[in-house]
Image (cartoon, rainbow, N blue to C red; front, top):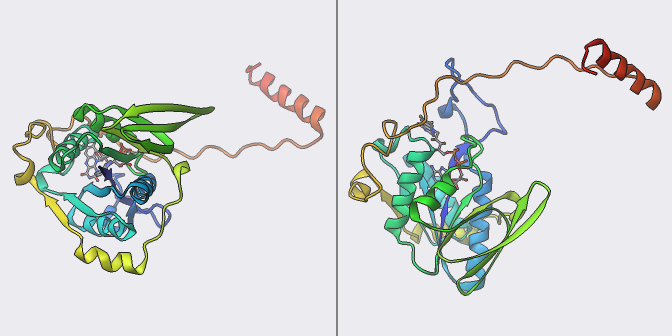
Amino acid sequence: MKIIVCIKQVPDTSGKVAVNPDGTLNRASMQTITNPDDMNAVEAALKLKDQTGCEVIVVTMGPPPAAGMLREAMAMGADRAVLVSAREFGGSDTYATSQILAAAISTIGVEDDDIVMCGRQAIDGDTAQVGPQIAEKLHLPQITYAADITKEGKTVTVKRMLEDGYMTIKTQTPCLITCIKELNTPRYMNISGIYATYNKPLDVYDYEKLKDHPLIDATTIGLKGSPTNIFKSFTPPQKGVGMMLEGDGKETCEKLAGILADKHII
Ligand SMILES: Cc1cc2nc3c(=O)[nH]c(=O)nc-3n(C[C@H](O)[C@H](O)[C@H](O)COP(=O)(O)OP(=O)(O)OC[C@H]3O[C@@H](n4cnc5c(N)ncnc54)[C@H](O)[C@@H]3O)c2cc1C
């Protein structure tokens, strides 16, 4: 059994966020972190590893420095890592990203007992599309918004978090699960884990490695293979200052009703 976890390097928005004159993020000037939901996915995989002894493989598509993030996941306990990186993959939208990641995951190999995990959503692109798209492209059953995961044999039971409650779903492996922060608290790296990463394999899948995969061709990857185009990005104008109404409950309600009536809202 193995668990393949997709993790994405994202800008650390808790620090200073620099924006280029054209409205795009100035990524070069910002620190990067592992996408928070992906840390929960790594932790969920490591918990299953603690219980079953399975193998955990972390995968990212990104520029070469993303290898540092993979090493951190291996220091937490992942067994090996795959960096998917090539100029041809640059500029990919969610469709092309999931196409390339699906090709990489099927090259690693998805067998009967395996699970693919993703975060629910990346804090920069913010679409929550990549996990479900990978599942579709690999023809895997998928369960999103996982707040609890248990596995018995080939049966995986997931408690999904909804807006107003929970839903419990069972599926069979192989499957794909997207994880949310309510699932767990990611563990820290420890010293022995950090040393151990030097002996753990980090493979690079470049264009040469994946180019003959059926999911990969020039029309489905990179900027040219991306059906989404960003025409404009902008910061929305700030809302006007709100109005505070003073007084007791009845008085405030009367004032509010008067204002709404003046504006012909009620
Ligand atoms: C035309 C176009 C060009 C773009 N060019 C660039 C570009 O040059 N550089 C750039 O950084 N972004 C670029 N983007 C944004 C990029 O496409 C998205 O960030 C990416 O497709 C992932 O989508 P998302 O961030 O919404 O992820 P979500 O769908 O929100 O992510 C969900 C989960 O999928 C997994 N996942 C997502 N992306 C990756 C990844 N790369 N590796 C491993 N796991 C992942 C993670 O587990 C993540 O938690 C571009 C977008 C468009 C539309």
